[in-house]
Amino acid sequence: MMVYASNQPSQFDEAIMDRIDEMVEFDLPGEHERRKMIAQYIEKYLLNPPGRWAKKVTTVDIGDDEIERVVHETNGFSGRAISKLAIAWQAAAYGTDGAILDQETFFKTVEQHKKSMAQKEGWLEHAKIRAEMLTTDR
Image (cartoon, rainbow, N blue to C red; front, side, top):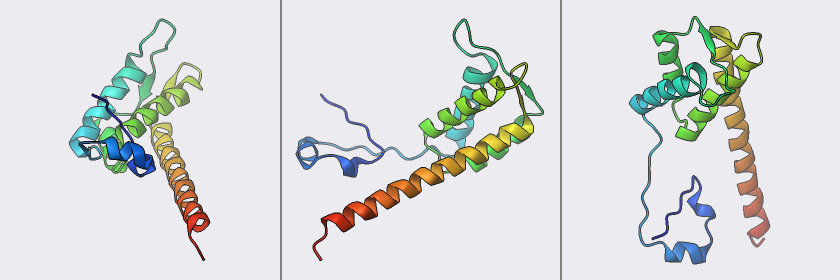
């Protein structure tokens, strides 16, 4: 058995697509799943990071209400995007004296992450339009 995973299955070659017997689509995480993932990644990357050299992050003024706001702001995020967001929180904290993540930086990082994702979407859309122009007979 072979398993392929892709956020863009349309990019698979026709020969590969011909060999796929079954396709299973996984939806983006819903509100409940995002809440669980955000809590899990905060625990993993901020509060109890793995490894001997990883520092614990001290969070300031980040509680249930702030996490709930992020749950709503991450609507449309994939699991990978949520994981990357948590790593960005960790990086932001590591850039301070004492590895501190405050509420302002917590939300600012979410906004920066959303802008970055929108930029990538724009690039993909532009590439798709360009490819279509190059392959269409005029």
